[in-house]
Length: 400
Image (cartoon, rainbow, N blue to C red; front, side, top):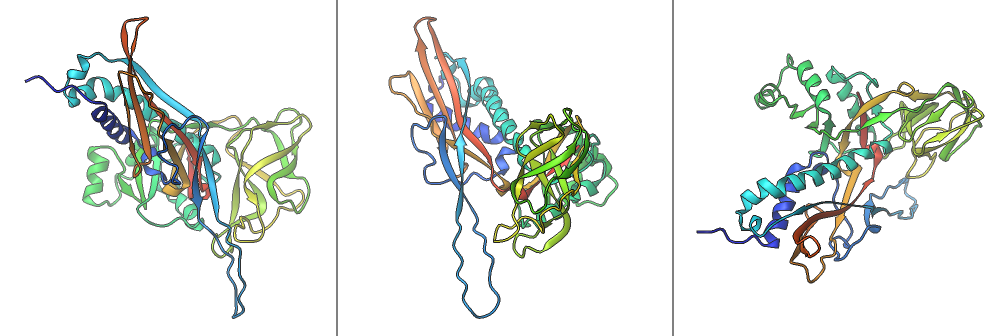
């Protein structure tokens, strides 16, 4: 008996399933959106909103002290449409879905999933917490364990949603390093037989080929804070070597005397707060006004640091100037967000449809139409999406 012709519904559902199976980092981030998700006809530039949790200061004593509810949402812009275009004949559509998926659909969806995943891992530039020695692949479990207090002090839940995403070289290096330690039998199977970390030290570990590399800026000099009592999302500095210092977006640094605070009590952790540069900049006079995250906030429910830096406080960069370093990530799922929406499916095409899953927070479109100029049936697969770092404090870079 001949196979039944494949329908758009079958193809798009299979494509969405393949997309999920191909995702590493992407599958383990926040994909909860406002009710606008799934609206028909979304285009590049469309915005969905993701809520952030409310914080309060609290009171001491019996007297009521009512606080404003500062509910915040983060706009996520769907700024990228990516797809794969190919020619699919009617003969291809007579295949069984398994054959069609293996031969034609699978490779196309794999390309889309890797693009989405790579774009997500580029969000490391927004993360300010960092451990490890740039240029040295971690060969001790302690380096990875040092991410735990970073997330703990930021209030990240100790639940099933903590993940460690690393490169292949990072994975084989740490698997070899811990081979002599005691493990549960299931973890030994993962590590010895499959060469994977599996579940360890409070994280689910994932190897991802799309782990990104960061190049530290070409800085020089002895940078200092220029002016006391500074607050906000920028810091005025001087002491850089004139005309030869660049700080790249994603560079991490500390300020002497400025510690991080615990989010619920706002007590100092006793550890220097790490900051990330949010925009690349150069100078010609040895002075820089650096855009930073987190902003220096000294009071209120969203306090970030224990104190403002003193005048001439030392600024210490993390990493070696001009050094390129792979960026592993330890994170809670709520640190990052992927948003997708339903692309428009035009009428009058040979085949057209999409598959959306609100639980996955993903949507993919399939269209096939006839090209009379070339006498060919042209097929396209598309995904419209956008990434956002929701809560950078719930993530930590692992420099390698």
